[in-house]
Figure (tube, helix red, strand yellow):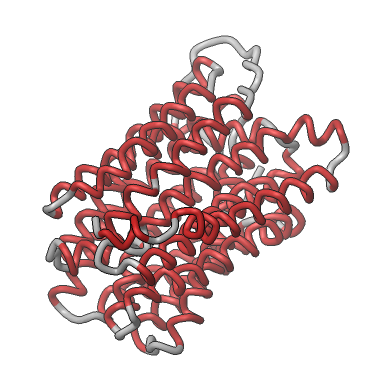
Amino acid sequence: MGESFFKRPMVSFARECMEPLVFFLVTSTLCYNLGMQNEERKLQKNVFMLGLTSFFTDLSSEMIFPVLPIFLTSVLGANMAVIGLIEGVAESAATILKLVSGWISDKFGKKKPLIVMGYSFSAVTKPLLALTTHWWQVLVIRIADRVGKGIRTAPRDSLIAASVPQKKMGAKFGLHRAMDTAGAVVGTLVSFLILQRYLGDAFKIIFLLSAIPGVIAVSVLVFGVKDAPKKTESGKLSFNFSACDPALKRFLWAIAFFNLANFSYAFFILRANDIGLAVYLIPLVYLVYNIVYAALSIPIGRLSDRIGRKMILVAGILLFGLTSLGFGFVANTLTIWGLFALYGLFMAVTDGVSRAYVSDLTATNKRGLALGTYHAIVGITVLPANFIGGVLWHSINVQAPFIYAAVLSAVSALLLIFYVKGAR
């Protein structure tokens, strides 16, 4: 690590990094408390505290994610096929844990221990990236980080669903997604500041500093979140896919097909680098994505509560196809900013709404397992999506993976329109 980092006044550097964080925490807490009645605040406190946990976790993660593909290519010498493999294996490796952790949280009625375990695992592993010298070491650490995500995701989403009335579920999942992504906004700003000032040492500095918000996230979770009361239903808990709601089954099949095209953010980051965008600007263009994602998650979630979720998801999938074509054919140093904004809009439209839709289609005492199944399907399909995209980029040309994504998106939208018939 270079001497410049230590010569610069640490108080000044810390202030630059913490100002946006403090602003977010103060304003969001005030808005949350002023906008809710006492009973509602007590009922839905979990959503806000889980949102804060995700805020700090994403702050930690998104310090790393915008620069990790560049680190792999420029420092460790990995090619696109390797990067596709790393992202695919990392996201898929913990897939079974999403299903198992969801089942355990339903079976024993305890969600918080699994959530704490998952967030803690990720907080410990990410800083280890500072020690890597080969791409396979990055793969191991990414797998370990995703194991933490696999343990926590389904129980956390189930706890959110258990903490709010169904008529507000879309809005509250949107709130959680917005707070999660607000952390990404702050994380990318911190990453930009470090890249701008300490380019030679930036990667290691970013990886090491990511430990701080990770520890804060776990602390907020431990002291601020309460477990949901255990349901009184008795009997053996099982998830029979053939016996679940037909609309849920069809939706999961449609999502599985779409996610074969929904490859990693790394492809979009490396496309920005490919067109000649300066390395220190990569976090800023990624910041545009996160700002749009955070700003629109709540209003789109509320819209899905009012008009239904299916057609909103159809619109989001079609938007992903159009965005992919844009990255493939019109990306340059000017249009790339708008394309990342469209990518953020796609995430705002689909991420929280799809989780709320799965919850709509599932009995209350089986939501953990159903959400685990949903996340497992997404995780399983990430590996082939990223591997195919990486091979297409490496073997044919840069446009090939984006064309592939656009075609599968169009077919997926048709499946969702005509194959998924309705909700209960």
